[in-house]
Image 1 (cartoon, helix red, strand yellow):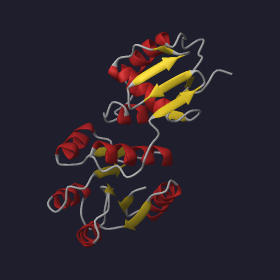
Image 2 (image 1 turned 90 degrees about the vertical axis):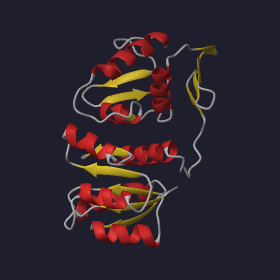
Image 3 (image 1 turned 30 degrees about the vertical axis):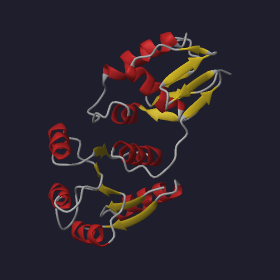
Length: 228
């Protein structure tokens, strides 16, 4: 559980994001303006800030610069702007992550958890071992086993498998995988996932045409589930 300051001026979007985070156990304080966000950070610092760019009183980029002047709290930019140059500029200006709307509640929760863990501010204990059928993924030991036999995986193959194994049966979008596993902004279709997925499937003894664990949901993403 984390305390999140949500800075979003659209009341419909703000309500949806607030509900998505609170449903997953986070404490959320919401505001519609940058100046109020600055006051709140000084008076009662949260664990993390989710910041929209299109605010009524200050542009989000200016708000990010001012926030970075008073705090080193993790900041996730959440906006409809998907220009790659802008994404890179804001990440270099101090944002810890960048999410392009629209996104799902589970994706937002995953990003919050990922950023907190990466910045050393994780407040929620997570399982270190995931069991899906005969597939066992030990995150702490970075060890994956299938039918009791160790799998020889590259670092990113393991990261991809571990991310999916932590969400058994759940469809995970390609955008989420690229942003969470590779920590890269989504700028359209990318072959990075496909290359790693091809080799991961081979090591699991399956193919895209004949999947056992890794199932492609056409036009959406991937789902890891036990055979049968």
